[in-house]
Image (cartoon, rainbow, N blue to C red; front, side, top):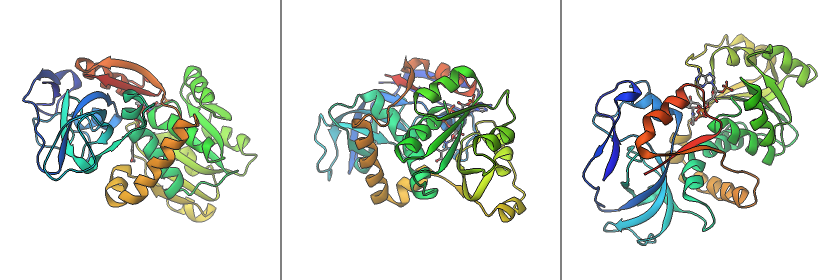
Length: 325
Ligand SMILES: NC(=O)c1ccc[n+]([C@@H]2O[C@H](COP(=O)([O-])OP(=O)(O)OC[C@H]3O[C@@H](n4cnc5c(N)ncnc54)[C@H](OP(=O)(O)O)[C@@H]3O)[C@@H](O)[C@H]2O)c1
């Protein structure tokens, strides 16, 4: 089969599109013929050796996929050949025509959910859902600020914030991206490249500050948020797409009585599978009711994975990219 292979941690253009042996289903595993693979920011980091996880090389990157079960290993029940599934690979491998994963890593998808939507729903929406529901316990009527609001997980947070009844403030770096955030339900728009974020938040909340911040960006935007929180607010640490991991003078949290809350969705799916399953059920329901949608910027052939990852790193994606083997 064809796959994208990372032979050594290196710039994105060093990724190889090549033939590799087909995977086989071991005990308690299934093989899935991948119809779509989600492109995520960590994929771009991990192949360059810039992520916290450093897998042994060579390896096939990608962890998010959807497709059809084509083989079932000993001990697997309830997943027949032909089942349409989405999955999260615990050991990468999704940028390929086929992948072998533990049966527990895949779940059937609704009939009217496309493979592309299924592949792209899990991580971006799953993270936003877990962050806003379990970590921030966002309440209807609260204000939610989403940084990088037209990015993969940013758009998801805008949609889910609306579904949970929040007033959503979107911050993006361009008018074009803000228009996408607005189409996805944002109530207030801030261009944080042109506007002073702290001042804009003061105006948007009539001086009260923001109840919940969803921050996949870090850097200076995070710093502005540490000075813009409402009392009892929750500042969610999602990621550092700006490349700058900020530091926090903790006296800020004392003075305003707010919390800084870490979010690690991958860990959550492993440690709390039952809660994760309930979250997915709710997410599927919102999807089928049209309350959340997957915004796909472009669908690209698998061989173009290096270009897709470079576009993410260049801040050039609205919503998500999907790779089609
Ligand atoms: N904690 C978790 O469990 C978890 C789960 C998923 C993702 N993440 C992390 O969340 C972050 C965002 O992921 P994503 O998939 O949403 O990525 P994405 O689609 O690329 O969106 C990131 C957004 O960050 C903003 N940004 C600001 N400075 C940037 C820069 N120098 N380069 C690129 N983007 C920049 C961009 O919005 P503007 O141009 O509007 O500023 C961009 O749209 C990543 O760090 C990822 O690792 C964490």
